[in-house]
Structures are given as C-alpha cells and as structure tokens.
Length: 429
Ligand code: NCD
Ligand code: ZN
Ligand code: ZN
Image (cartoon, rainbow, N blue to C red; front, side, top):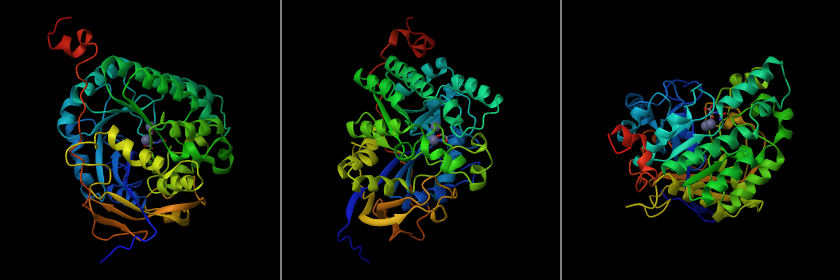
C-alpha cells in the first residue's frame, strides 16, 4: 500500500502543548479515544494534556490513573501534573512517576481548582527548577477576577461583553509579571498559556529580555475572533481568558511573527452543545474544541500571507518541541524525525462544521469558516493514524507517553542562600 504525496507538503506533526481530554471524570465531554482521534484529524501528533480532570492529576495515584485512561490514545502525549497549594510535597514524586511538565492555575477556570498562594508558587517553582520541568501557567489573577465578577453578577449585568469586563487585561498582565518574577528568582522555566491580550506581551517580552526562560502560546480564537463576534456567537464564544478586541489580535499576530509569542496551542476544551448554550454568557461552560481545526485555520493564514509556512512549522512543532524537552536530544534529530508527520494539501478547501468534528464537544465558534489547507494524512512514529481525511481503524493504543523528555534543571538555585528547600534541608540560612 503506497501513499501518493504528489503536490503535497510533509510537515512535522503539530505538537499541541495545551489540550483538555477530560478523562477521568468528564467523559461525556471527551475521552482519550475521541480526543486523540480529533488530534489525528488535525495533523497533531503529540499533545500535552492538562490536569483539570476529575480527580485532578495532583498525586502519583492520580497520574497513574490518567496513564491508564490514556492507554487508548492514537497519538503521542505528555501529561501535566498539577502544581497546587496542597501538593508541593508531591511534585518530585509526580515527576518521578512520569509527569512531563507542571500546570499551575493562577486563576479560576473550568474544574474550580483553587489558585496556589504566591508563597506556594515560589516553593513549587524552586522544585520545578531543580527537576528541570517546565511550569505552564493559567496566568490570570484569581483575586482580581473574583472581586470583579461578583460585583458584575450582583448588578445583574447581562451584556455580552461582561465576560471581558470580569477578566480585563490587567488580570493577565499582573499574573504574567508575577510569575516571571518568581521564575527569575528561582531559575524555573515557565510557559504562559493562552495569551489573549496586547497587555500581557509587555511583561512577557520584558522577562525574555531579562533572560528568564519563558515561552508563550496563543490560540486560533485569540488571533481570528474579537469583540465584534460576541453578538453573533453568544455564549459559544465564552472562553477563559476571553476573546478580546481587534487591537489585541493584531498585536498577537505581530508577536507571533516577531517571536515574542513562541507557539500555537489550541486549549482544546470541549463541552457539549447543551453546556455551551445554557443562557447568559456567565452560564456557559468556558472553552471549545480546537485540536482538530488549528492546522486548517493556521494554514489558511499561511495561504493569506499572514505568516510563512516556515513560521508555521516553527510555532506548531519546532518551538514547542524545544520548550518541552522533546528536541534536541539523543535519538531525536528534529521534530518529525520519528516520522511524526502531517501530510498537508495546501490547496484543500474545507468548511468548519461542528457536526463533522471527531471531538465529543460538537460545537465551535468557527462554524462555517472556510479554510484553505488541511492535513490529508497523519503519521505517528511512521504509522498512519489518519488517511485521506478519515480515521484509520485499529490504531487505538498506538499513542505513547513521551518518556524521553530532556530535563533542563537550572544549574543551581539562583538564590541558593535564600532557598526554602535549602533551609528545610538544614542548609546555611
Ligand atoms: C478550559 C477547560 O475547559 O478546561 N477552559 C477554557 O475556557 N480555556 C480551562 C482553561 O484552559 O482555562
Ligand atoms: Zn487556562
Ligand atoms: Zn486550557
């Protein structure tokens, strides 16, 4: 059986460092089979999956449970361990059991995981720095949001843009700046998830200038939607952080081209249509699926000349691989070198339709959008998992956890004499 690639392009499969596959706990929204099938349809060959499942992935037992759930994956995956107030003592064991990175929810979002105090974050960052695992941040400040949302809801506000008002840019600016200060102090490597605003780019760029190892991602919704879409889409558009103004998406495109924002991730956050359409914007579950539509949407931007194909490969595969320790390293020459490949037809025209998504969350703010360019085949470690825009049979379980992550421990704690770990270990104060 041969694969004819005449006129097609071979791209390294996308590495999506931000997906929610919902299992265990919320399998009516997604599970590891449907989530990874959606990824394979989207040309995504490796995903990093978030810990806000039920139970959350915050201990070794819970990580093992998620590894069991992920047995049916058809693409490769990394797993996040939660970094929270009450599990700082577990982080080393989580890493030893195979957590590939940590996730810290600085602000409230789906799953209602309380944000750790800044003190707990400082200690968690110190541990992550010593372990050499990256910490990905939901960078919104819980206390600011809680205050504003309570005030707006009490006033009975039903304006479609209230969701932005409850989570103004300052919420993210403050969180990115604070996380960067903690990373600089401890030597931790951090990653800012779902960058939505022009404002956040200032502390992000500044931290990079200071030499902090910080990377950032944005998602198609922040590039391709803005406040003018709220009236048309209603609660479907609800996502944390919110889709903002046209000036923000313009700034995010610029930041992607200049490299201030390193990569594209999807924040694939499926919910059922009923959970999305239940009244006012506050009442809708936040987020929507994305792992399947990212590549067609971004290849459309390539076709429109907004970014080059080389830029796209950098932001979808090369930079995520570098940031999360998948490359360069022994045995891995480059992203795609293990035949993790998206075979792409740059001229293929499709229309996004929720009822054709492979995710269980069959609702998308991109409904009806016409795309040009799509992954027509997907290979994971040389094996076809998607062929001719269809799932390949019998590939459940082919996906493996990425165990060969290159850890990058900080050379030594930057402020060793004030390190809490050193003090607790009886070191010199
Ligand atoms: C995510 C989810 O549903 O898990 N939702 C979202 O709006 N982005 C959580 C998150 O990434 O904050
Ligand atoms: Zn988030
Ligand atoms: Zn998310």
